[in-house]
Length: 116
Image (cartoon, rainbow, N blue to C red):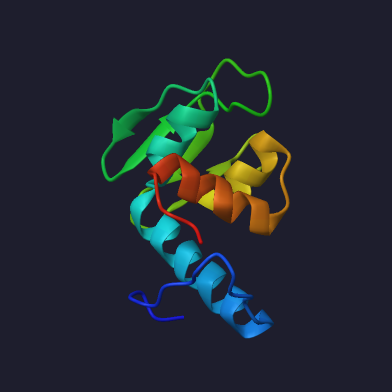
């Protein structure tokens, strides 16, 4: 669906329109909701910069030595202790107990994006 296309309240979206809209929203959330910000927002983890990455104690298990790494250039995270890994959508799904489509909409809501 084109960004300038408007859907009035009475219009019914086709499956293709819904897919296109979700894809567009997904890409915008992926580009704008930075993984380090999502981790700070959705978990108790406190990250510190180490070069081009961030690290901290894993929010998914108890540990004393930081094994949770966040690669901002790739937009993903990984814990070398418990193996938990993913991107912003995986983080939202895990912390909020949501399915993928709901995670997209959750991310859009966090960014204040208008969803038709």
